[in-house]
Structures are given as C-alpha cells and as structure tokens.
Amino acid sequence: VSPGCRGAQGRLAYKLLHDLFANYSSALRPVEDTDRALNVTLQVTLAQIIDMDERNQVLTSYLWVRQTWLDAHLTWDKDEYGGIDSIRIPSSYVWRPDIILYNNADERFGGSMETNVVLRSDGHIMWDSPAITKSSCKVDVSYFPFDGQRCRLTFGSWTYNGNQIDLRNQLDTGDLTDFVENVEWEMLGMPATRNVITYGCCSEPYPDVTYTLLLRRRASFYVFNLLLPCIMVSFLAPLGFYLPADSGEKVSLGVTVLLALTVFQLLVAESMPPSESVPLIGE
Image (cartoon, rainbow, N blue to C red; front, side):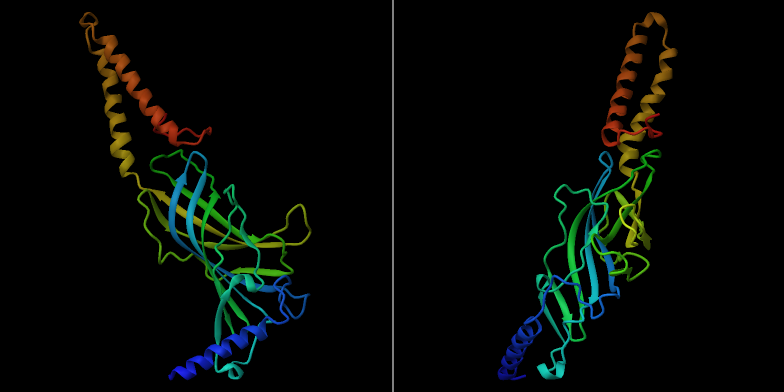
C-alpha cells in the first residue's frame, strides 16, 4: 500500500469519528425502541488469584472483563469510508453499561480501567478491561488445611433493571486459559450461572451473572510446617505419665508440651476467622 493510501485512510478515520459523534450522547441507552431491553453479554477471564484472606473473608483476584453490546446509534457504511470496518476509541466516548461487582469488599470500590473499546460498522461494541477486585467470600475452615472454598463473583447492573438491560453470560464457565497457578490454592473450575432476582426495594427483576470459583487448598506447606510438628508434640504428652515421680522432670515435660501445643494453637488461630467453626487441627 502506498503512503498516499495510508494518509487517505487516516483522513477517512478522522471523518468517520467526527460524523459518528457529531450528534451522539453517551448518557442515554442506545436503543431505537426504548421499550425493548438491550442485550449485554458478559465474559470473565480469571488471570490470577492474588490473595485469599481467610480471617477477613476477602478474595483478591485479577480479572479480564469483556462486555459486548449493540449501539444502534453508531453504525456506518464501511464502503463510504474506504472499507473501514472497525475503529478503537476511548471507552468514555460511548455509552457503557454500569456493570459492577455486587459483592465488592474494596473500600475504594474501584471499577475497571478506562481502556479503549472496539466499535464495528454494524454497531457492535466490545469492551475489554482488566480489573483487580476484592470480593467477599464465605470461608469454611472446618477441615483446614484440607479444605476447599467456593467464592462467588456476582456481576450485574446497578441502575438498569431486566426490562432495560438483559445481561447474559457468553459461556457456561469462566475463561481459565490464561490463569496463573497459585502456590496456595488449586483452581478446580469456574462455572457461570445467570440469575434473575427481584429485590425488596423494587418490583422489576434484576438479572445478574454469578461466577463460582471452586478452590482447593494445597496442604503440603501446612502438613510439614504445622501438622507434623503438632502430632510429634502430642505424642510427647503421654510420655509424662511414664516418668517416675522422683525424677524431677515430670512437671517440666508436661509444662513444656503444654506450651508447645499452645504455640501451635495460636499459629492456627492467627490465620482463621473468628467464627464458631473450629478447625479439626485446633480441636
């Protein structure tokens, strides 16, 4: 392609951008018929589990969130603009669905990054944005360190009900192809389900997409550093009954074993949430 053709393509792209947004407003829902719901498709890719805070019951994860929808006001004939089929523009230029994480546990309540969107000539918009999320997760540590957790990520619109935005999941599971293995947790799966819930505040239904992270703890670290020493110290406890009373070491051995078990109990309690479910190792 000659340099002159590249320059022509650039001028056509500027003209296309000017023509599209001359009378466009990103504040209103982009539909021709306001009585019909706008279909929004959601797909989440789990890139990394950054931290699982069992004590505060907060999961920190790194996600790639993809949203696609149809903007009826941003279409063009690509033959009139030199065959330009798609352009990449800042996401703040177009209307975006207010999809947020319902069970967010971040005090700043930060959203996704302001990345570009891909706009196609037929009006379809694809918005890929990375996000580091902190979500609340109910942690059950009864079988620590051989426990498994089910953490949910629930996405939905905050202001648009089901009659205005029809939120659906693109696949029946989250994307784990680019997942970075975690040293403490093993990822078993990430199924996705669509729910339609009617809340007490409103009579309209609100659809959401819930991704369930199925996690299993890698127990090798805790077996060698916590479980085996605790078992060895516990075996020393009955030896105090075999020592003769006149040896002078009976009380010292009993107190030493008691202090060692207390230290291991404190180590377990530091990482566990203050709940009624006591881990078996603590018992």
